[in-house]
Image (cartoon, rainbow, N blue to C red):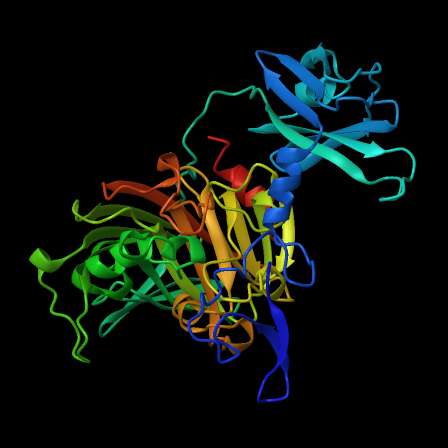
Length: 492
């Protein structure tokens, strides 16, 4: 990571790169890369490097847990092994793991059912289970203190249940609906949703009288480009995205209608056309033949407060690989306490998530932001089953995968995608009026084999083919457990 700390005209100091010293020609931030900042502060990618390099490997296959010592000369006598078992993200138990000495370049295998975690697994009613095996140093060395984690690996244990779609039971609670011009207000005693039936947008969502959502919910296929997106000049993903108009897509409402308004539910269906805008200030015309995307979104609002969103996406098949396939909405700034069940706790993406472990984590929106010197897509968390956004009083919004949809890629930021794209320094970023949330059904990998060619591996690309996915939203209060909300869609 090459960067020099330079004093700026405003008196502040920030990391400078090519072109900031009057140097012409230059390579801009080409050399400003690596797994640390210039002051050796680790990037999130450092976790992935450590995981790949860790000398103690753990694998689970066909009921056998295998622990391998890849050291060439050291045995495991200076290591303490421990275990922790989790069910649906909650710790079931933990303890020291007694193992025989493992010689260099040797392995130890055991049947997983003989481990101390098996009785916890057998008595639990969770949907999914994970086991984490950790090795720590028993004694200090010249380079690190005792207790340093040498390796930590999480494996998924067998489920005791067959997979069933995540569905809520039919709700009998009544819902109050009122049509006011172009809007429909749907409410119950502690929540209120106002939707524009002309555009299909949620104009406001209040929980216990507190504004929660102020703008949403819209399809999204764009991300703020990262360095790896720009590598390869005309062949880069970024150049291809620009050439196809992906960076300038505006979503126009082709049709929107309230299909069902009953005592128990309100169903609204909107069809959006993703039209690339030109360089003029005039809005694009909603012509289907020009659409890069046709998106059908169905909102079903129940008296329970559940809002189920079903999305069906049809991209133009001539598009290049897509940056993302998902939805975007904006929350009030006060909804800055984020809790999720998925990979974490640090930033991770589909092709950089081996080191991240599945669990229940909490962070503020501010702490989720990764201050890369040159901003771009950041703060994502992979394989998210559910997430909640709450204010300090516990009021907020819950979101989860639904029906047969897989876990999501999630991000939440004070900085909009457009702002992350605009700024050339982290210090230049300007916070928006709310929190921009992305829940992605698919998110393209971030690559990194090199930074000068488009080299994201094929299995992490998103081809322009049809996609369907569903998301569940639910209002939460201080007395609400996100874990219990999630469980309610499993007990069917």
